[in-house]
Image (cartoon, rainbow, N blue to C red; front, side, top):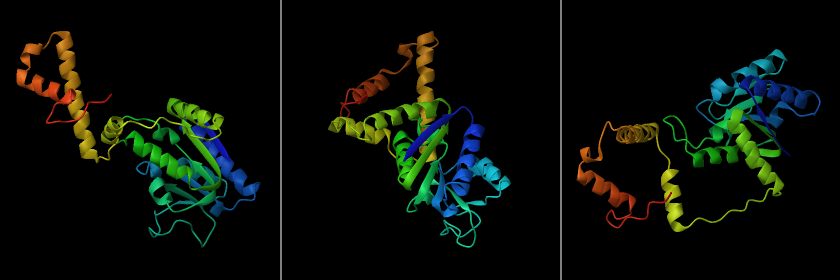
Length: 239
């Protein structure tokens, strides 16, 4: 069973999650081992789960972050009752009846920022988190990005959870593979910086601070060859 909700603030999201987990343990006859809380972005897991864990602790419920303070191989704690919180990487290969996917809004943005992930990686993280569930999934997030994800999930639900799509052409596949390729932080940082330089040049041309005659003709010709697909037999530039 799938439930998804958006919240205006992270505090509202965290309080809802804590209340639901308390209900699971006190009314729904679930055990702590039946619950996994997944934060899709592995880099923000520690910071993002702290408030929920404090709320649970205040209500007498222990929790832990998989791989933190214990052996990296430990996912569930067998010696005492404890709800497992985890990033997406440690969630792989583990399943539970109830899975909470928190901060799902972080899987929505397609911006390839210096510290972000591309849209393909974000979607894979969300898909992996959802598939950790044996029965129930709760997807929650914050703000406009989560509302956008809600609309997508509404469409999937209205279509009886069947995905229909137009298979891309070879040219489109090539473009998508390039745009969504895996990159490390340095590579993303370089692209962000280069794009900013191009925007600065464009603004200067528009504002008259720079003239097209200031750009060497050789550079213009090279750009034209690349964007028109004539660079040593290269493919078409797809947008």
